[in-house]
Structure formats: C-alpha cells, structure tokens
Length: 288
Ligand SMILES: NC(=O)c1ccc[n+]([C@@H]2O[C@H](COP(=O)([O-])OP(=O)(O)OC[C@H]3O[C@@H](n4cnc5c(N)ncnc54)[C@H](OP(=O)(O)O)[C@@H]3O)[C@@H](O)[C@H]2O)c1
Image 1 (spheres, rainbow, N blue to C red):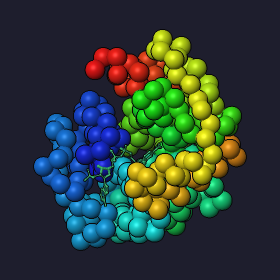
Image 2: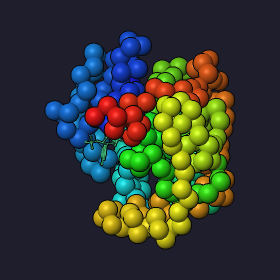
Image 3: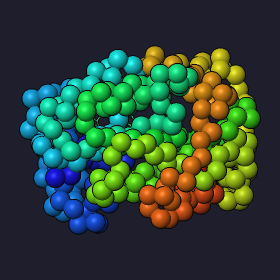
C-alpha cells in the first residue's frame, strides 16, 4: 500500500491527488481525521510522528511511504523524524520517499538543510530503501517575497537561488512511490534557472506589468523585522542561516532531475509567476 503523510498540508495534499488521478489506493496518515482530504480509494489512519504506538498501526510491511518533513526547528524536528524513521524500519516498509532540501548535509550553512541532512543520515542508517526529493525555496511562495508595495526587502544582495514548485515536487514524489527504480536516489527538483532577487523582481515586473523591485537590507535589519513579528528562535536562526547560505551559493542549484523522472520540462520562474499572478501583491491590491 502507498502511505502518504502530510496530506492535510500542501505538498502531501498534492501527492494524494496525484495518486488518486493515477488510480492508486492509499493510506493517509494524518493528525486529525476530520481534516484528511477527500480522495478516492483512501483509508485514513490517525498517527503523529512522535507516537510510535499509533505509527505501528499506520505503517505496515511492504508499504511505500511518503514522509513529509516537519516545519519545526532543531532537536524537536529531529526527534520527531527519528521516531518516524524508527517506526518505518520496525514495520519493514519497502521504501520511504523523504522531502528534503538542496545541499542537505552536516556542513550545510542553512540550519534546515543540516536537519534534512541528519534525517537523510537516519534513513541511510535505518536500512530502509529511501529516496530523497530535495527542494529549494518553494516557488509557490514567491508572491510572499514582496511587500505589499512590490518591494522585496531581504538580505542576499546579488546571490542566486533556484526555486521548487510544489506541484512538480508532487509529480516526482508520486512517480517515486509508484514506479520501480527510485530507491537509494537523491533528486533535486528545481526550476530550470536560478536568479538573484533583483532578477526575480525584473521577471515579476515583466510578467505582471506592475513594477517590482529589490531593496537589499542587512541581516540586522531583517532580524529586527522578524523579531517584531514574534517569530520563534529557530525561525530566526533558519532565516539568518538561509541568507548566509544564499550568499555562499547553497541555493544556486539547477538540475534536470524533474525532466529525467517525468519526461516533462519544469516550469520556468516566469511561468510560475504567471500562474500565481492573482497572489502577486500589486495585482491582488488592484483587484481588491
Ligand atoms: N522549501 C521551502 O521553501 C519550504 C518552506 C516551508 C516548509 N518547508 C518544508 O516542507 C514541508 C512540506 O511543506 P508544505 O507546504 O506541504 O507544509 P504544510 O502545508 O505546512 O504541511 C505540513 C504537514 O505536516 C503535518 N504535520 C505537522 N506536524 C506533524 C506531526 N508531528 N506528525 C505528523 N504530521 C505532522 C501537517 O499536519 P497538520 O495539518 O495536522 O498540521 C501537514 O499535513 C514543511 O513541513 C517543511 O518541512 C519547505
């Protein structure tokens, strides 16, 4: 059976719908059964990553499992991931497909990439066949990089980054779960180009017809801003290390892995912004 975690969220929800479209039955492992997506041929089991007893019912021998990474920082995330990997190994599942991050590993500057690296290490040590689907920053979140006035106020200067589009991640996750030969493989699913934040603003301007721009700010200004929003300490560390990682080129990763797995070209950043135009702040403000 194919098992999908995170289906109440965005990537997992898209994976469940891809599997439904492909005609595969699945087991959705959720924290709240009332919020499970309504998809055909799905059974729903309630279990969270920190509950080994519940996971023992949710994961069974021979299952092929999508493991969403959790959006929490530091040891809490690693303990929950460790608990899930241990349950998967104990159940003798056939494969875990894990949602990771580009350049995951112990030497990554970005704190989340170090945590994804540690989770990949857990999978490697577990003996369970696994596939890593590494992503860069979500392309679906590009509208949020710009303030309501169309200005991206971020550190990063002229460093470059690629993005990853959640629907394309879901395509590859569904392929890895349903086709043979994806075990013990790492895929980097990225847009076909990387951009600086100034170039991102230029693309947004060209695609939308509104004026977007980039105003570089210092790390200190950024941290002031996020602290004022009451963000937790791990999110501040993640943010600050992400800008340093960007400056060191950790997010400047472009591959053709999407095309290799699906046979299709990934969407360009311009195509993604066009698809998300209603969410771009200047378009949204004009239409409000
Ligand atoms: N690349 C990027 O730019 C980027 C940005 C943000 C996050 N991420 C990572 O990508 C992951 C997936 O992204 P997304 O947009 O799909 O996130 P999302 O919409 O927030 O979905 C996260 C899913 O994880 C589930 N979950 C949370 N804690 C859990 C636990 N203890 N046990 C079991 N399930 C739990 C949530 O369930 P509930 O609905 O019950 O909460 C939800 O279904 C994130 O979790 C994060 O690790 C990447």
